[in-house]
Amino acid sequence: TIAAYFLANHYVIQRAEDRFEFRAQEITRAITDRMNVYEQVLWSTAGFMNASEDVRRDEFATFVETLDINTQWPGIQGIGLSIPVTPDDLQAHIQTIRAEGFPDYNVKPAGERDLYSAIIYLEPFDWRNKRAFGYDMWSNDMRRQAMMRARDMGMAATSGIITLVQETSEDVQRGFLMYVPVYKTRDIPDSQQEREAQFLGWVYSPFRSRDLMSGIL
Image 1 (tube, helix red, strand yellow):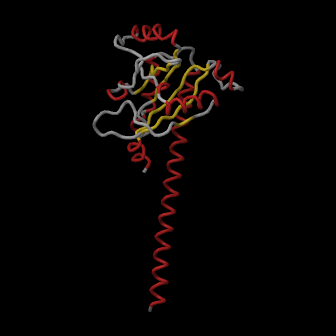
Image 2: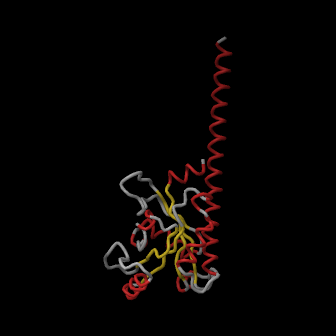
């Protein structure tokens, strides 16, 4: 009886461990597959940018609206474009965006820096994403590391865990960002030096972790 008990107990535990391991592998594959798909969504947006001399704000909005990310790609908070801005060009950049119908636009946070970036497009342009409009992601070390990898290596890069600027005091979720680079050459230059010289901006997506995992699972 004792021998039978231990054999049965071992069998039950082994079955439970096997089920757990299978489920863990299944979830891991689901996350990996979903993130690969999301990366392709960003590359397709970069391709859309490359197909035009100058993508207007309304054209970008129409493109993202067609993707229907809230329904088809749950977990993506939006798709945006961020561009680098030098200190010499900062005021001209601000005036250009204000002239497009955003009189209160500013690059934030305020302060003097060697280089700025600015989120100029972010769709859907809802109340949450409007909080990120004009935000300088380059000013944050965690974001900047991923942005540098994307720019210098010509590949998709994901940030570490952060709190998105879209968050409010309610239902706060941790998040992260994925970036892909866009170059003036419309393809990825061969050398890092060329990639830096021809760099135009980052197509990116912010992700709210709980929303993302709910969509995957």
